[in-house]
Image (tube, rainbow, N blue to C red; front, side, top):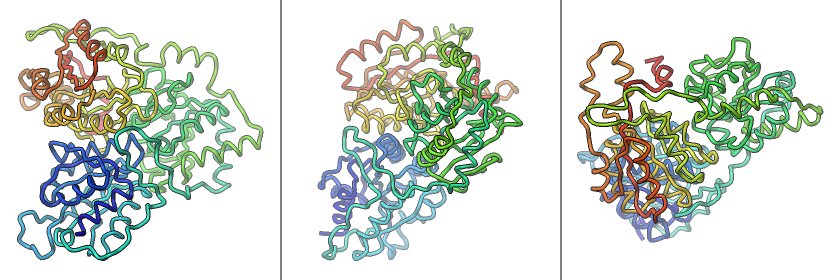
Length: 570
């Protein structure tokens, strides 16, 4: 057995159940060894797509994502997806061939460790045949226990060397679970989990006990901690209104007092109620400009508390009055016990008036709007993206996963498409790159084949990633791909256009995206009005054994309402 085969076998034992990638000579043997030992290999058409698929798969399953790429250009092609995963603290293991140390003139030679470090990933390497399996185990532990994206370099000379007789390491206690096709429960969290000291818990309890209008904002850390139920109970005890950051949307689905998302995507009612809070507790939430509308949602006299496992996150985006280093679930349980011991319970912000208002205005579907006036143009009718998305929400089954690309359109699916829980929205926005949405949806669909996956894309991102339509069709994924087609990079049009700048560089002639989809083997329809969505209903009623592309020709005369917030610092 050569080292590459031993590495593949060991990774399969450590939980690499599904692997995404593009195979070249440098990762050929290790990928085949993974497959030979039971892993499912999903071949993408571009390494960038493969990286984002693996990222999304890990986010949805809660296990270890695995990406396999060739050395040099295979890795550089994947860098944007790796950067997104690293910034999102996705437990992702990147297997990359690496030029042998002696091959100093190889055209594939780049400083791969430096590339990884530059985008926030952790560089690792198999150093020798004798240490290879320990090196693999260390990389997996780092990825899972520290929730990091790890690049494991596989030098070709070490890969090809005979592997000395050595037992494979035991599966890490961190639980580096990959998941083959089909959903499995999330991996067990890694003990020990940090809990703030008793004095800090008492101070948080004091703040909650003294608040009349408390609001909880739960972020990525709360989602990763699976803290929804615990936080909901605590919110009920202290009379808090729970909200989430965009990436944690769905954590409080079904709670009649939930405010949905805080920030640029917040409804007018949610924004007003958050702005009226006298206490905001951020649970695993960074409180960045997106979540706070550049601070406008936090009142001048509002007390702000932040809970996070990462000490460097406390106060990173804005000053806080109290910061606690601790796991969200464990901290919430500790403060709940403290309040129970004190006998504290309060109505707080949970009044009949607030309940009635949220029942009337709590969803974007409840907010009245006037259709955009440019519904008719030289190229035919165009549909208001709000009308489109509300109609789709009524058509689609409730059990769904919504994957959203970046761009001017992104708030429509992120807010008007309901999600069933915290796993229902996959938002790859940490690096703010367009073109990741389709691959995100493919990774999510592979992870959760029991749910309908919706890819919501702009035309720019869709065309940037179009090659992966073949991947979705080849896998037979029942994926609904909705393209919000304004024939432009809409964010730039609406940001620069009002100032009189020329827009030739960000506008494009019409493209028949539906025809492009059919060319890849997908079902497709062009949508210009509500009636055109009948084709989607027919597809939903069928076997859904191939993707469907909806080329939605949307109105384009006005910017999305969140755009002004998004560009305030640009």
